[in-house]
Length: 154
Image (tube, rainbow, N blue to C red; front, side, top):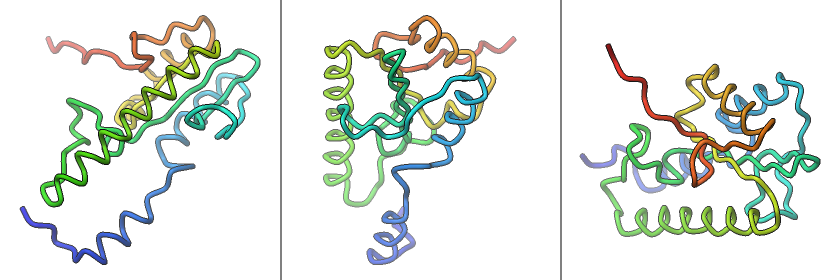
């Protein structure tokens, strides 16, 4: 399918996408604050500028958009059909940067968690995972994502 917008219109739409204070980030912030944890936002002195930083606990949380960070297997991530070379390179660079930043934070003694945009649709599950990460440091998976397997259907 061909893009229904001109390249100027598409550029204007893409330029309006926020990197801070996005809806998924606000969901995570409300959940963490509601659990009684206090945090700082977007600490530029840390690798990758984590979205939420709990310095006293040495915890960092990134909230990733499924499209921009290439969440594999997610219905919100679909490689665009136009300008594929650009988008493959862009998303691959984002993923590579994410990995480098997480490694640097872990080497510096921080615990890191990644929350995907699609996971904010189930706030109860997300809250439980965030609480476990913040209280005991159990991120859920080896790569630090607060991910989970879909529930099996009966």
